[in-house]
Amino acid sequence: MPSSFAPTAAMAIFVAVFALATFRGVHVGLLMFVAACAVGPTLAGMTLPDVIGGFPAGILTLVAGVTYFFGMAQLNGTLDRVMAWLLARIGGRQGMVTVLFFGLAALMAAMGSPQAGLATGPVGMSAARRARVDAALMAIAINSGICAGSFAPTSLFGVITYRVARQAGIDVSTFILLAVAIVANLALFAVASMVFSRAPGATTDSASVGVTAVSQLAENQSPVPGTGPLQMHQAVTLLCLLCLVPGIVGATLVGYQVDIGVVLLALGALLALLDPSLGARAFTRIDWSTAFVVCGIVTYVGVLQKLDAVNLLGRQAMAIGTPFLAALVICMIAALVSAFASTTGVLAALVPMAVPLASSGAVPGWALITTLGVSATIVDASPFSNTGATLVASAPEEDRPRLRVMLLRWAMAMVVVGPLVLLPLLMLFGR
Image (cartoon, rainbow, N blue to C red):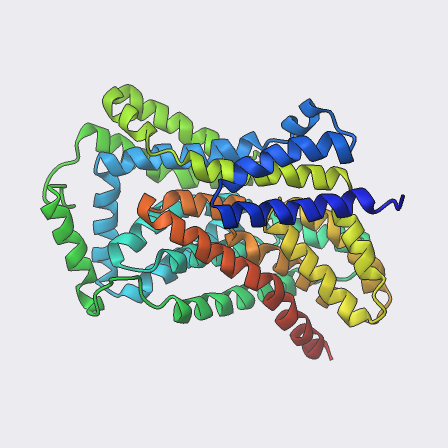
């Protein structure tokens, strides 16, 4: 029996389960988790506790924390006041809303951890709703900002890509890596702005957006900033919001990795102690469905990793006769796997896999490694990744089904478009 039978069969089952869940309308996370529990012991030699141990509790905590805390901030009116203030400062310039959050996400991600940029997600998705901006556009803007900033020499993805490449003897400039990431993500943001130019049902008068948002708050009998004092619960929530980002960034700078999900659950517990009835109502805002979609798929991907399926794909790509085509396939594999798994893990696994091809001189090493790194991150808008799941969970409940579909389509398009456009351009630039 060929040694590649088990990983190949497991990947085929993954595709089949995904298709079955889609066509039958069954929760894909549920089917994937059950499939993982079946495939792990039969094909990967894993025990059932080993398979279940791969269930990513961190993602569950992240989604629960984000939706619980910001659900409470929405229910007590704090988020509405922040959004009205923000839109008033922008002055009704609808296009500036996404630009603002692209920049904020990039800045925070550049300060140490891409997770810091996730703090902009719930606020940005709420701002999109108020400003009548397509939720998919805001999600892509935030993801693109995170991807751009995360390749700074001070941030995680930049450090991993740079160090692994340098250890393999490939000279990759940190400046070029960051510059390519910024330009590529700005280009994607511009394309997304044209594709998702206006949210369904949006008004055509963008100058009235800020006024409309404030009037909506008044109609809902929510306090408008500047018209009344903050209630105690709102003041504490606002203080938590103001301390959240500096706290995450500060902890990252001193070398401590903060779990945003745990922090937000702790802040939510604090607010619940102040108002238990509000805490009980906010608990219904937790998006368990999105969390289990991601967790079920990641559990199955853990089985694939146990079978060394990613490395098998990489070795098969290396066997392709044309170096340029082999490089393209490796970058596409990195993007595809990253859409369903940890981007950090993908970079650590596939950058070394690409080293022999990069060292051969047939494809410029810096161009291949840079393309691989950027390609593995631009797909993080996928609803099955940490970033995408957080953004979907942060959107209003009625927007989530469409947002999942749009972000999945975008991510799958980026699997092909990213490497196909970026690698030839970088090779041309290198010459």
